[in-house]
Length: 234
Image (cartoon, rainbow, N blue to C red):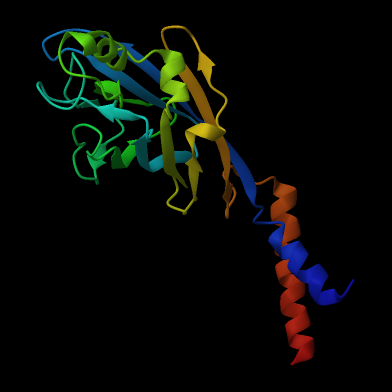
């Protein structure tokens, strides 16, 4: 191996690249109620035990076979429920247009986050219906009821949600972006709720923990070797 290669390898040992894992847990919970109290709750919990990561951006897109029913007497079925957010301390700022109503409405919502750290859970609620087209009057009553009451199995099979987010390092270094389509996830149908998890890792360009003394010594030795080699070449 060439001396220059050895020099660079030794110097880099002082600044190892570490893979830092994380998980985003997603939970879907439907609540049926009348007079605008119906809601489907979407919970996102960020889990990064190292404490070196934070979630900085996220977008959630409702499946193509589902629609939001946010106001009364709209394209949705039977019960309805407006959008509401509880950010759990994530410091959320919405960056997308507001959610739209019905099949032609906006199905994507996105935020930037100031402090979406390990253990924080963000929740938003909005009534979700199936995009079923029902006949008018009594003949369509059963159809409308089924379209309004999306079951866990129905939520998953109709497209659920596509999620995209960015995870960065808390020390200010950039991280990486991830995209998780619903079709590629392993879902758990709990009968009343559905859940899945999105896992990944961010490669830190600087150590996320204090290096061992031996690493510093090796790195400094490599830098000294580089300096010596440079002097000889000159």
